[in-house]
Image (cartoon, rainbow, N blue to C red; front, top):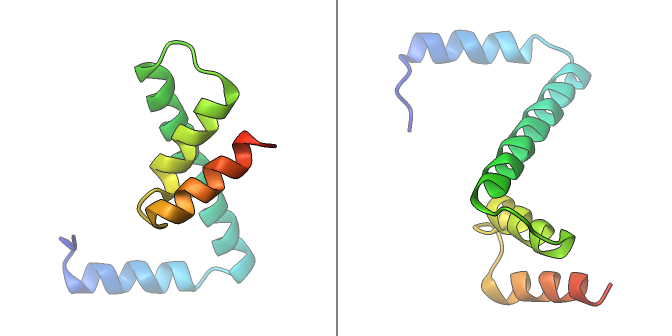
Length: 83
């Protein structure tokens, strides 16, 4: 979804690109950490008690579930089960 006027989007892009690559990477890492914290909070709110494997599984599925196929997802989760 893109609901920003083109001039605002252009100004925002220029502002971000004016930062150093290291600063942009740090921003991306902070945003990802925040996203993971929100996912974790949502899972904890839905499930009272969860073992560490189930929590990792839920986190993985919510964050990466649409990016990998079902067979690849099953392989990854299975590898964790045997670790």
